[in-house]
Length: 273
Image (cartoon, rainbow, N blue to C red; front, side, top):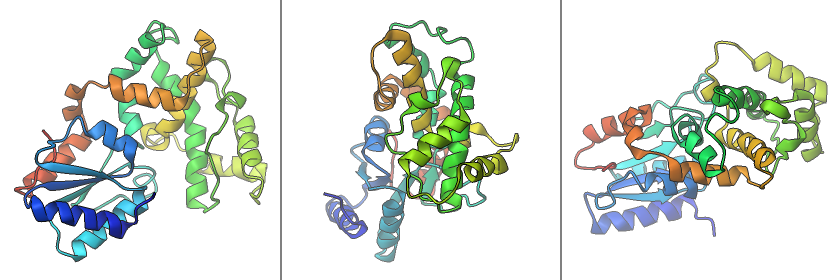
């Protein structure tokens, strides 16, 4: 059952009534809980999943209105920075990359995923990350176009094998065909979607802010499946990345710095170990 912002806020307030100095960490979903639980101080911070960004933000507003202190919201950056609408809120910290999966992909965890799949870390070449980013970039731009133009395109259960070729090369035409087939009610033509991608594309963009980690993992899954003849999904890649991530690398992220900065300004509430 999905909880409303009011339900989540009430749960946090009830916990706070017993543990007055215990911080509250709001994240977007259960996958985030699985990752951050390894990093937070359980004795001094309670982590709660919301059903997405909008629910997390609505919950924060309810808690603020009731005067509840010590609340921190961790969000995926998504397209907030590249679209010119960054989060400027002392109670919100965002990921360095488009989403949490991006942080995991550009860590040492990626090489461990290949080894676990019985592949050498250099099996796909020395520039695997570059290949993955290049392939995911057009999908990221299409997601951004859908969001900014309110096209409401669904990318759920997308079959990446339809447009990802050898060496992770993406066929943009086939990508758009796959999206239109998944969204039969879309009034935007194939030519218009291609034009939207082209209009948003700019060489100065940080690809880590455009590329969705879900897409990167799904693309990698296609490559590993083809290389090993053993089926693996993007969701499995995401899970394995969380398990393989070296938490000692977390202090090197802007996300860590943002959380620590927030802790310093909101004593006695603590989030991280």
